[in-house]
Image 1 (tube, rainbow, N blue to C red):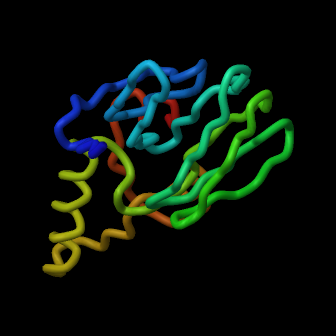
Image 2 (cartoon, rainbow, N blue to C red):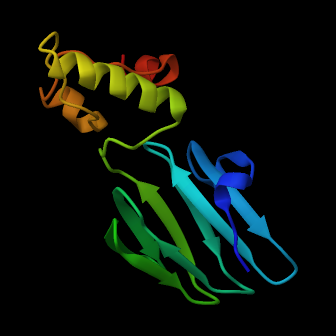
Length: 152
């Protein structure tokens, strides 16, 4: 059976399994399985949860993050696969800085800023983590109002 995720509606799942921020996912589900193509927005996490009735396999197509399974922390990155066995607990944290992070608005803003940089109009370094703001990696931060207020 063929599944075309582009034909499935994009769902915005806030605080997925008790995590932070938002998981964006196209979800196929039948009586036997649930299959997701998902993106964790920058700084988001999937809350700690147990797979009591089934296992879970996650293949990372981009970015990097941290997976904590049964209390053991492991870095994860694009091209890797993480397997959570039935009965295990795990959480996933997106702590990456890759270009493709975020929702459509963030992608559009990134593309405009990158173009301005390539044209020599600004010095754009790309996405940075919160620690980069205070480490002097950037002079200006473009962010949403909620995150900006927290930083201030």
